[in-house]
Image (tube, rainbow over all chains, first blue to last red; front, side):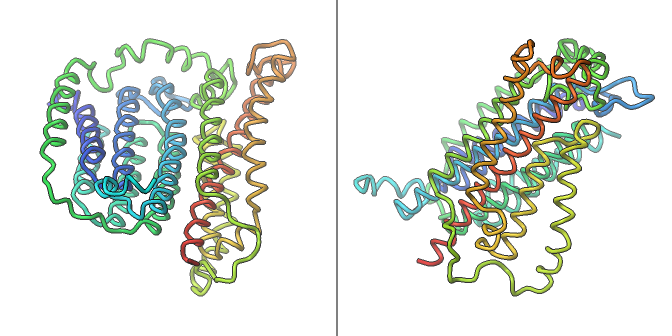
Length: 118
Length: 325
């Protein structure tokens, strides 16, 4: 049982990462690809936060009577990464909107026929 | 108990991700992704990362869902059915996944306080930052002081992303469009929005200025304040919202935030310290740290607020333009 608890978080991280990766490479629709990228990204967040956790620790805010805190460094890295993630996602979505208005489709396999439109 | 909650929540997260893969209705995909974000926020709380959970709940579940729905309004909500089966991607994913799972067996066990990652700089942050910076929230100390240079870069990226979206989509025109937009005809929504919006803004200010002592800070506050205005725009229509907070003002605010941040750094080296070394901002180092952190959190809050709202305006204006055509 302790073997499972020791590695469970990392296994789920790998599973989510692969789920996101699968959506990115198999989906035709560009919006769905962006969702896949976001899932991939969240899996990395999950990994960092899992690494920073200390069993029996507390949130890294000083309070009386608490001796063990979880690692604050991964929290800082991921906090900023989430905001940057949504900012870059919005650029991706904006590109998709422009692709839609230029090509009339957001399905990847339909672009091939329209290459000469550029 | 923590481990058990962790087990259940991560399982639910994996199921949600599986469902997202197979759904063809993109509206449902986006909604599930919102649920996915909320579940991640819960997991972050369970793993002691309260600041991160705060950010994920407001950004992941709030803003990105709104932006994705805005995109779907323009691109259509159905994914076309794929005729060929995706064998190659499946094989690639399974092989990569198996290699990574094998790799995880070399990881140090979850939650052990003797792991290498807990031995590096973390003990110094945990032991010294309350005296050195004078703030109880170590995450804020590390974010705004020890790693301030890094955070300046992140703020600049948010600013750059807003510029990117604006150059791709453009901002709404100032003149009022003839078409009524928003959900003004719904009495309940109108009344509830009027009641809730001031409270959201008040909460954003609390998060902004209380971030030194509890969870929160400029990133979260900026997003929450932007969410209040987005709610206003959704209920009362984009032209009304653009009348309240003009897009040109937002462009200036986004730049001003980065300027305040970088300006604090420049001020600190003109006063004899290093770039973003706040000790020199006041006669007492701890007081100097406090002034510096409040200033740069203000800069972050302004930039994030203005950038998120600019991005929303750009998406909403694009949708309105398409509706008129």
